[in-house]
Length: 338
Image (cartoon, rainbow, N blue to C red):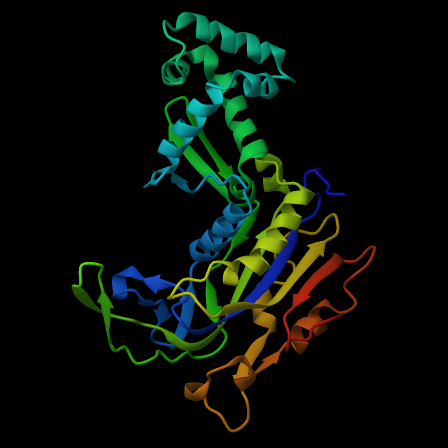
């Protein structure tokens, strides 16, 4: 049975996935080439890219997502919030649910309604933006939307800045930019011809990496979870989403990306994020004997060394120790246990 209680423990996590002959994260400032630290030949992927994978995956499951399209159009978070509020305020049955535990705020909301000549949702929002007495009602509506509607805000937070509804939610789940654990070679970029429906064609460039084993670190913070309402059930959904989302919606440039390892260190009470530092510091990947980094084309061309991480975590799990438990997911070909 899923637990809908707010999470009670801090965690740090490590996530690895591989990218094979694809473009893990195009850099718009570099002709959409794979994002790179060119001085060190290290492939980079932003946290925003991974969050987009997760959001798109959750959407395929029918989950409400806040950072998304509104109809067929891309919209700003503020425009999205306005559209969502309009739908909520037009739904009398749902409003009863919103105020079920706060009859005092329900009364304040009704007072604002009475002052408005029309009862359209748009006019109601305008009135609530201008009415000082509506401030607590507005905050209650925002909290309802975050905690009951939009799991991506419960994960990653968001900032709202429209008049009368200004509030920032710090995301309990934070990710660093990912980087490859080895030097990465770009594939030769040849001209690509795309044939249009009208028979015309366009010529462009197709930039990809040969192979990249990417490592991310992240945190899950119980104190920030109070603000967004992140539950234990949400956390189960996050673990599933970060693992399954990478290959779930392949496009031409993102095909051939697969999860390899997820390690989550769940701390006991009294221990905070970062107790063991960035978990990526305790792992390495080097070319197998006889290969150099320019020749890496697949996972089996690398030696992934997790021994230091195992040593760091060994004997740290249990009562009166830093770690409550360690959750591990491994793909075929990867072995890690304590």
